[in-house]
Length: 108
Image (cartoon, rainbow, N blue to C red; front, top):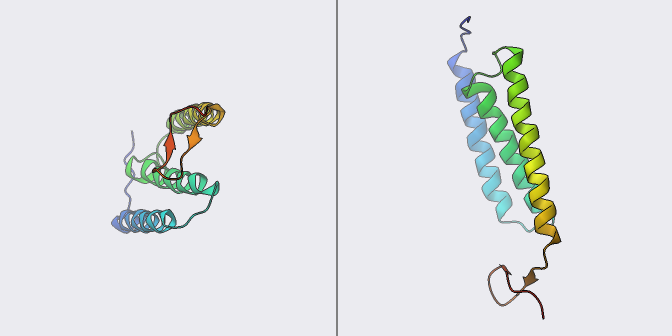
């Protein structure tokens, strides 16, 4: 296995990008984007995860087989998230505006 030397400035740049994306996530949390709130938060989180996987786990400079296994993990995650969102959207949860959030009580 050959060693690939990555300059320290790349790590600092990725770290600064992760901090910036964290600040953006916190800032977005204060805005009501409606149905897009979950998508925006998930998109930022996936981008941050991709940066960590590519640079801190050295997948960017690894063999193609490693990339295939990482991609398979993301496909599996997408399948699980799809099933979770389909299940959660099909439930008959009742929104109670006087309390905080959703209740597991079925409407009568």
